[in-house]
Image (cartoon, rainbow, N blue to C red; front, side):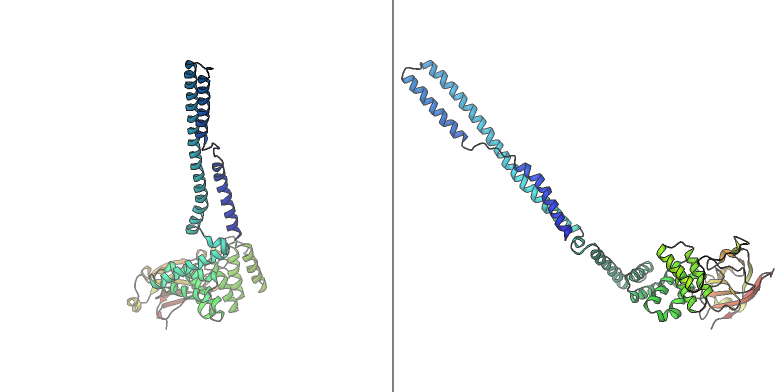
Length: 402
């Protein structure tokens, strides 16, 4: 309200600055000046005629005096006419002053009502902005539900908007639509869905949200949402080492100070250090250990797959039952038979490596649904790796997951 009062006062002051000088420009000439001049002329002519009658003025002098008097009258009448013209101009200025003042007040008000965000002046900027955002989100939701249900980017935007607004159930629904459209291959969607499940129904996080988080980490190991909630999930499973590792990787991304403080406090609470422990022997230790792998597909399964289906090759610590793999790469079935090397460049979680592990399991999986997590109908094969092995690890894909 203060804004509107100040704006009105400033507008009136501006109008006065324009109108007052125009109004004051009036001429004080009398509208009866012509009649007064004619009366003076008549009186002086009558006086000249009396002088002639009394013999005080000769006829020739009377004629000359009368001509002078008529010339003076004509001159005065011309001046009166000019003053009348100026007065008319002044009246026009007054009209112009009134019109200018009215326009200066009315036009900005009309334009502001039509084009401006007048609610910000009445309701306050924050409330006006909230109303505007709510309207945009509602419009987007209506479009997606009625006109364009296959707009993946739109569902992602809607889910993120609901998340920021604290409408977690709606966010879960929006990300659920996006999850189906992305077919489990979009890390942002997976991480967003996992987060909304954690916030909407924490009891369902480990069964519904955490699998999406783990898939997001395979596709995008540095995704901040996935690292944070992946750490929480690892802690829930009792794997403090993995939780610390993921949060350390999150700290390595240099988050804002307020988030850094929360992450460091969480690490300290489970006895970890905010600084990753890096072996002093090598600055590139993550890349020093490698696994040479050869992957083949059993002949009796070749007719069950298509060339464009996804093939994942993982290395997991021996005995590991959950969490992301140590190393992972993605291929397609058309690449089989496949000879490749898993190295430090394929680390899934920053800060982890194959170094320090004496044994690992190499898994090759043809993901029928395109997701890293095992699904019924996927084709899989496994083989063991031991540190110091010089030959390749031969993995034969020979079974179908129930």
